[in-house]
Image (cartoon, rainbow, N blue to C red; front, top):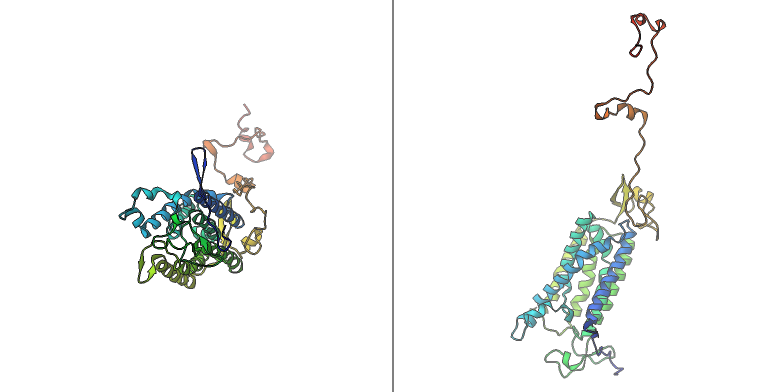
Length: 359
């Protein structure tokens, strides 16, 4: 082992009988689990139903994988449609190749669809779950290390990564160690997650502003990291496509942060319905929120242990409501006892006889 550089794993696939277990897939799954765990904790602290994030993941994960794959194919078409390309390789997601922009874009569409199904405000949910996204990206980048891909220019330093000859980019076969750009992005993503978490605690972002901050932070780092990479990609005017994407989305995200205002919302239960309110409203304070979040382990008033809204018991009718209630089924309530016969003392008309039932 060369201690002057970071070694690459010798294997990326293990076999459990006839079933291949791929490190890349395991890293993706671990990233998804981490993102869901973080999102669940943050959404619960804002009064969302328990495990609503799993219902959202059912939509977001497949949409994100498809979007990431389509973006990768679009930006690296030669591997699939070039002279030596194989279009069927488009389906081989386990071999690597998921573009972050496409994954986030279509994954966001999946979250939006899930929010419509659950009747949750999309912007509110997006701001809550966004902290887990860079953590998932960071874990997923370990899959690139196992696959010995997405590294950068040749580098002679102790933090350089050693790449086997079979995995070296054409034209760089004589070099043994390279910039570990996947590691740079892993560390950058963890930093982005930390900054997002601290900033959201301080400023109580709402209206999608936490998402916009994520875009600014992530793509700022991605711009310089992308400039170090040597894997084939579309380029124009000296910049790779992802660098142009970085510039465009950062400008749009900064404009969004400057123009859009909105603070965090949390859920409260009113009249048996979960509704969003401002984190610093009287309703939120009455529900037990402290600094925009429910205390750890606390239940939202009006919900059970799973976060489901408890059906409000029906209130008894008062006397006025009972008198005003219309007769049901066209039959008036019968008195429990027959009225007593009128006597002469009851009035001048009493001598006309007696009441019904006197026989």
